[in-house]
Image (cartoon, rainbow, N blue to C red; front, side, top):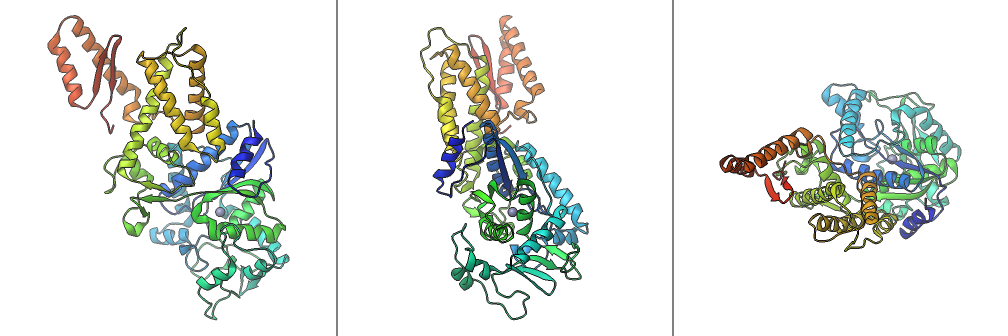
Length: 491
Ligand code: ZN
C-alpha cells in the first residue's frame, strides 16, 4: 500500500491537499437520474470511478463507494421550476414514478454489469432519504443561509457568498453569474435570482410529494448528495466524483450546503470525468445522435455500422484519459475493437508460453511503469500502451523469435492479470460468439478432422473444409505444431 502514490496523484492535479486516511477511503459519486435508457454519458463516469475504486483497492485501501440514485427532485432543465424528470416520464407512460425508477434502474444495472463495472458498496436512493434531507435543510436554516418562502425553502446564495465564496469549484464568481441570470420578475418566491431550492412546495398536479415542516413537497436536486454523503461517509470524506457537467451548479451548490450546515467543506478531492461527443457533436435526443448502450451492444442504430461489445466500449473509454473529451465514431470504435482483441489474444497466448533457460530478452520495470501511470492521475492510456509493448514481447516469444526467462514470464503473467483483469476490468466476453466455448470447440473439431483427412491424403475434403471456413471469413494458419485460426471480424 502506498499512500504517497495517491498523494502524488492528487497533488499533481493542483487541488488542495490533505492526506487520505488509509486504510479507509470514502468515495461518493453522483449516480444517474433514472428516467431513460442508459447511454454513453452513463458509461463514462461509471467506468472512470470503477477504475478508481478498483485501483484504490489494489493499493490496499478499504473503500466505501457510495453512488446514489436520483429518483426525485431533478427537474427538467436542471432548474428550480418545471416538472420532475421522473414524474414527467411516469405521466407520459401512465406509470407510477417508482415503476419508472425500477424499470430504468434494472436496465442501468444490466448495462453496468455488461461493462464489468463493479457495484458500489452502497447505492442509496434520494427518495429513501427524505428525513435526512429535511434535517439537512433545518441545519442550513439554523445557520442563517436559507429562508422559507410560501412553503418552499431557498438557499441564500448572496449571503453565503459574503461569508464564504460561492462558485469556488467551477471558478465562477457571483457578479458574472448575476449578469448572466435573468432578473426575477417579481412573482418569484425567491429573494434573489441565484438562490436555489432546498425544498419545493408541491403544486396540486405534482405527484411526488412528502411531508415537511414547511409544506407537502419535495427536496431540491442538489440536496440529496449532501445529505446522503454525510450519512454514509461522514461530515468529511476523501473523494467526490461525477461528470464535468455536474461541476456547476450541482457540486458548487453541494459545497455551499455542506459549509452552511456543517461549518466546513466535506470533500477533500473532487474528480470530474470529461464529456463524450459523437462524431464531434454533443450527444442529444434532438440531434438524432443519441445512442443507448443497448444499441451499441446490438448495433441497431442508424449511426452504427456494426455492433460493439461491452468490452470494446469499456476499452475505448479507457484509451482516453478521463479528463480529456472523448469522441465516438465507428472508425475509432473499430480501432479499439482491433486493439482489444490484440491485447486479449496476447493475454491468452501468455498461458501457453514456455520459458527459456537462455533468455534473449530481459523484462524490466513493467509493473512499476504501469503503477506509475495509474498514480499519475489514473493515466489508463499509458497503462494500455505499456501492456501493448509487453504484448509485442509475448508475440515475439510465441513466434520463436525471442525468448524470456521463467521469472520474467511469471512477472508478465502476474502484471497482465492485475492490470488487464483486476484494474482495467477487461474480461474475455464469454457470452459473445467469438468466445463462446461451444463455438470454439466446433471450429477446432472441424480443423482437427481436416488434419486427420490430410494425413489420409484426402486432399479434396481437406481443401473443402479450408475453403468453406475461409469463405465465411475465418483465417486459418497452418504451422509445424498444428493450426491456428481467427474468427471473421465483426463477430
Ligand atoms: Zn450529486
